Structures are given as C-alpha cells and as structure tokens.
Amino acid sequence: MIDIEAIQRMNVQDGDLLVVPPDSDQHDMALLCDALYALMPDRRVIIIRGPLQQVDVGDMNKLGWYRA
Image (cartoon, rainbow, N blue to C red; front, side, top):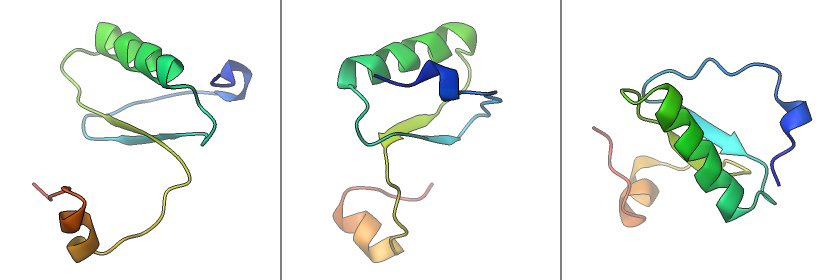
C-alpha cells in the first residue's frame, strides 16, 4: 500500500515520472493513476515502482523505452 501519510505535496506536471516505493501494490498504483487522470486528464505521467536506476539510452532502447 502507498503510504499516504508520507505524501506531503504533489505538483504533477505533464511528462513527470512518479516513483513509488518498491513494495507498492499494483492495485494501489492503478488507483493513483485513476485519481491523477480524474484530476488532470490532460497531463501524462509515468508511474513506476522504485528504486529508479540510471540507464543509458542503449539499455533503454533494449527495454522498449524510446525518447520522444
């Protein structure tokens, strides 16, 4: 479950990457996604479970991630 008490403020912008704790439940992540869409339907964000690591462009491409 996402620790709601740990959230202080979210000022989500279009194109943001939101990193949630590694033990976050898939259902809770879907609820967060739905809530963000309901509040800001014109903004696109990516939600991933952490930890986030730095990878180079070649590794990202191998995983199916491409820069726009």
